[in-house]
View 1 (cartoon, rainbow, N blue to C red):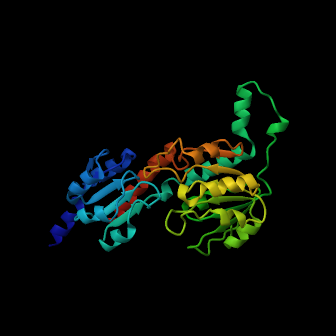
View 2 (cartoon, rainbow, N blue to C red):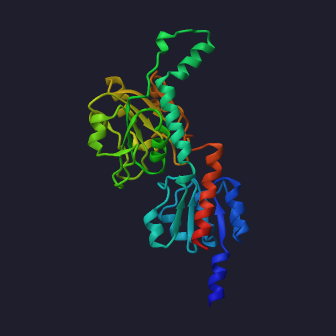
View 3 (cartoon, one colour):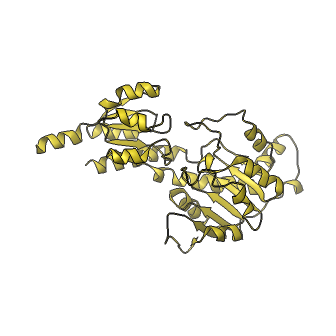
Length: 320
């Protein structure tokens, strides 16, 4: 009986549904797992064959909801490369004893650096400076910037990326306030844990670092922006649907938001592809105080490796 139990642990058949760094495939194979890939299967094709697999590796290409789990009779784990789990029904997974792994530790530094980089670029009008100088336009007064030093930065969501952003802000002479509905006791010498009301009253800069679920959908809406007691700069590198875009546009037009940095958009599809013709995107792009990037805050050369290495550690340690 003991030998059968050990054999069932070692012999794992894993289906890769999305391309991730090869280190995950290599380490699982070295540990005796059988790795296979299907990067183009439809959801129906996946359901037809998932019963033969004990593990799945995915980013965001397909939803793993109730219909999927009804066919996944032998599934033991799902490995999500990245942090967001909105495409996976966590409750059903738990009921079926399917372990769900994610790797937010792998891209926390990438997101923290990207958020800081976007903020500094916005403050110093670097994109417009580059575009103008490239065209031979030399306007110094019009491109006068704003300093980060002395500002109060409010971080909403103090998990991996929120805390990484706070770490990157050290040395800039800012006051850092952080609010997290689900965490307490995380104040440090450079971060003060506060209520959301304190961020509304004190923040000059606000950065969202939230997972997407029912409680955070349209977290930043019209009421949110109207709650601030002074104009703010706004950053979102979490999930697009945490922000109600038309509420941001209204806040920008009213001067409640002085500028915005957006890496994610509510009109991305499940696999984070953007509707480039969306009317709201065109309105955002027309603002000279809005900086946009294509959902790449967590995607660097280094994080691409770390996202998979973290998953390998978690899977192999759990089933050791």
